[in-house]
Length: 129
Image (cartoon, rainbow, N blue to C red; front, side):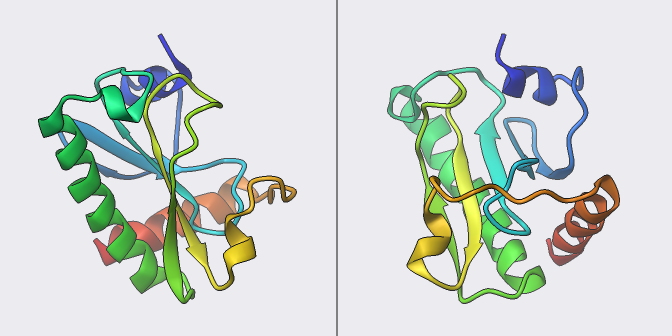
């Protein structure tokens, strides 16, 4: 069971911004920017392109809803989308508020926020949903 499956099952706490029966969006605790969210299917599948078509399309639509809320609540020009898939063997989409292309550079040092700051960000995004 991956760490993302444990988060989806409620075994590990997370700053959840949106949830449906099939999908979950939560703040990345090692973000590239404030409001960096991970969107996952609750069904554990390693590689995003191994998802069945219905789950894949549902994940993209769910990510679009969350990205719209991020854009409304976090000052940014766009919400960037990245699928890396090497860190955790559970399909996931990164949604990252960005103002420059370099904001999506995963080689950059990650930011660190307090639990209070993460909770405030989570609430801002939730409110915009």
